Image (tube, rainbow, N blue to C red; front, side, top):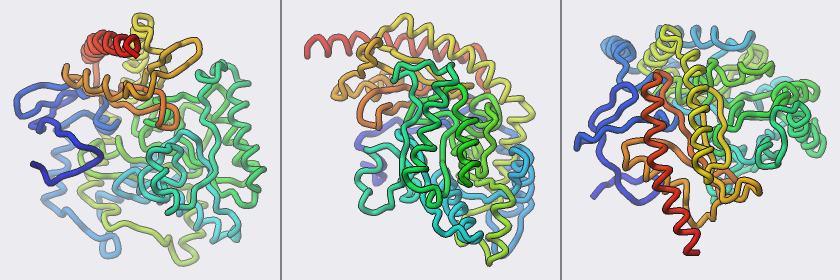
Length: 445
């Protein structure tokens, strides 16, 4: 019996230890962490440099409340992080996770509008599907029905536009016209809502769990920046999953000329060592708020010195090991190998991603893009098969969380070619078994 509960019934093996890209349960079985947990463990498990930095900070202090003290760890991490941002984004607000980071970004945007006489601006446009967090504010901008529907009466749901899923719509993602087609949906929504009422647009530069490593079509990111600027709307980049090197650059948005006004980060920033996240904002947004009495928002563990010491060590490891470059090189190889699996298994209808944020999507028919029947619960079945073979991957449903199945393959940024071989071998064996089971079920139906 366990007194713990999370999302569902069921038990898992007890974790004994983790090193690098591997984890072991108490029975000694080894697993390759092919999803970095939930796309978190960017520098791998039990990195000794990070652990040493944490021990050093623990010997000094583990907590110092921000209204009572400044801490060296939080100041140093803020300086380091600001130096990795686009020019002008130099004000850092620490939190404990991704949902808190998104909430902070939304509230900063609103308070800036109030402080500058733009009180009519309150709507935050986002995309469907999308996922931005589990708190009510973050859910309001999330487009993922299974997670939002139970709480709709409790929140102010925000306007949505379609995510640019060119592959499902039969459009060429490499054609700039496709990117402009989807981006112009943002301007159309702004005009429908009334530009004077729209505060911000929040977007994942590369899709996360809700769209499975969706890379925007050519021209999309630059056009949404242009549209936001034209209408005086803030652009919030949700880099919770894409930040800290995951896509081959420090920020996912660094791949495009689309400078954000606000960046929200977590996951790879703390890399699984401690709960840590951050909102980084343009100074021009923060100054008016502080001048009018301060940011009406905060969390008890904001800027915790132990968390910040770990975060600083993580960023130093990313830099010293050149993990952004490794993510780019290994990611290209991984995508090529996943495409090879698509040629082998007809159930794979699409492969996509950037850096070490990659995914493949199951389809019942590639030509029509028809998903597998939802009753098969294909995404979870595949995860379970891979797990039984000692390979951890991550899955969600592609089409608003109700249909379609994709598998995210996102190993730690420290992976080498040998690890990629292991991942592909595990996927191949799992796909062989999965295909047999699914075909049998479809034939029986």
